[in-house]
Image 1 (cartoon, rainbow, N blue to C red):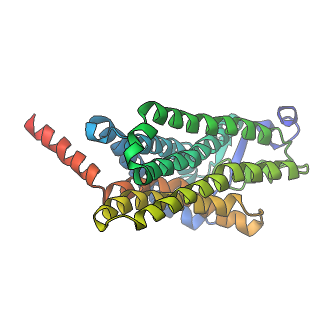
Image 2: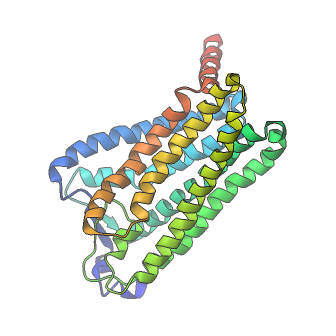
Image 3: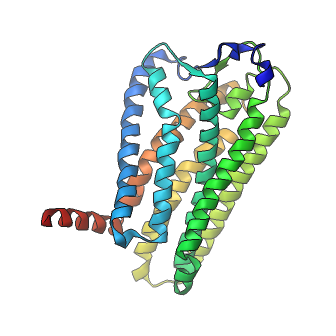
Amino acid sequence: MMNDVGKNGTSEGYFILLGFSKWPHLELVLFVIILIFYLMTLTGNLFIIILSCLDTHLHTPMYFFLSNLSVLDLCYTTSSIPQLLFNLQGPDKTISYAGCMIQLYFVLALGSTECVLLVVMSYDRYAAVCKPLHYAVLMHPRFCHLLAVGSWVSGFAASALHSSFTFWVPLCGHHQVDNFFCEVPALLQLSCIDTHANELTLMVMSSVFVVIPLVLILTSYGAIARAVLRMPSTGLQKVFGTCGAHLMVVSLFFIPVMCIYLQPPTENSQDKGKFIALFYTVVTPSLNPLIYTLRNKDVRGAIRRLIGSKREI
């Protein structure tokens, strides 16, 4: 693609992110709503990270992975939302060519990492519920760190291959990306060559990082459901509290992603895809902290201990 930059619309060194310009009357409303959700995302996820670090009672595999998820959500939203907010507040909706490449890489990397990390979190819940006597051995701190590192490395390595493959595609004369951030389907629409190979690669990557993780998560929760049916009622509330929260997070993340990446692109689906993408890049990361903390006794206890220690000081 670098050889074609002088021949096509990227010769000026930028792309135009069309975003929601088809609905100019919505831009101010969207700016306010997105800003509120972005601030909620920053506040909620930073709160979980800081609380998990400060309270020793939360130094467990579950909260270690939850902290990783919070870091991911912070990075994921920050990779696209500040640019979107800037574009919504005025007529300038451009992003540099280098900025588009960087954004695509991090959006793919962080999204793929989150898919793998959610599988790891489901395995942690499986071990806690189905193998409670062996939990400490199965989820040894060193193994937990390896699982977390493996999630991050796999996501970033896959993104390096996929994003470079996407940016080698030569573009036609225009450089208008029909989305609010640089993502693969919208960029492939700018190509002036046959992109079936890229679309096939996208389907394969989506299967590896969306379908397979989802199958593994559902398999884990199938085993958890069977174990729960044999449990006395006294232990059910805690199981439903942690597992139910994780299942809700999985649903909020995977369902929108599948709606975008596992269907053939059309003009109507592109417009709907913008609002679906807006949901899982803005709304879902802001809800995750609420889902994990509202009915969580461990977190409420950690907050009380933190407030109590400050009062003593």
